[in-house]
Length: 307
Image 1: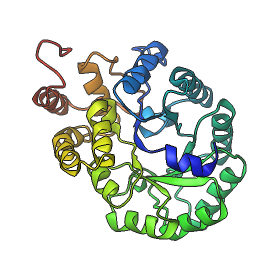
Image 2 (image 1 turned 120 degrees about the horizontal axis):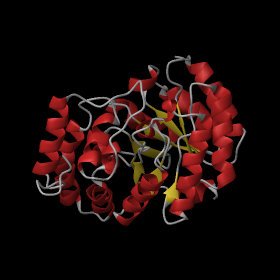
Image 3 (image 1 turned 90 degrees about the horizontal axis):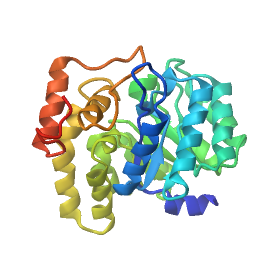
């Protein structure tokens, strides 16, 4: 896909699909396929896997490749596919990004390395080396709350100027001044996706391309409708959906993502709510808040809720 074509196409609600596990901790491939089909049927515009919501740091490289391969096969071109290929390890990031290109992903989402805390020059070298090794479009994933490092706008601008295949960024960044300056400095056609749920609507207002929201795992239809409403010029509907989704956005981040999301999907009967250590399920109190919110929003009913 040409990069300009990619910039036109890769827009909307991209669901960062969780990785379902069995009680014994194995990847539940059957459930994973069902989740992807449900997302597409519900109107999600794109699918991402092995991002933060997919627990990639708890998976082996072989498992991550298997999940990517299975997702690509299941999607079968119905929507676009942007797997997460980043890691704390540079060589692993290179290997996974090259694999995404090999299997025909539409873009690769590469996270700012977590734990290592590289400086800005090291970040530039890491991303430039990865981008130069492939022709697939690259989406930077900037998530300072997880990585402990924020990619500065000046670094992002250098990368965009030097790497034609770096076409966008997922900003899980609460600093709205920062995200405004991303578009000012990287170009108004640079694909800006919100990774902060409460900023999904505001980022559209400044020219964002969409969002990669964990909430779409639980309420894919309305998350996608928010983008559709804005894109259709129905500002009031988009605003209404923004506020309607806010209680769900809030409760799903009462504990570390994707713990509350997996609890919610378990209550909905979609998955076995299993996480791999070192992550675990949230407290009984938070689980109760999740259940109440799902009931209040009619995502669940007392009759259909899994106890």
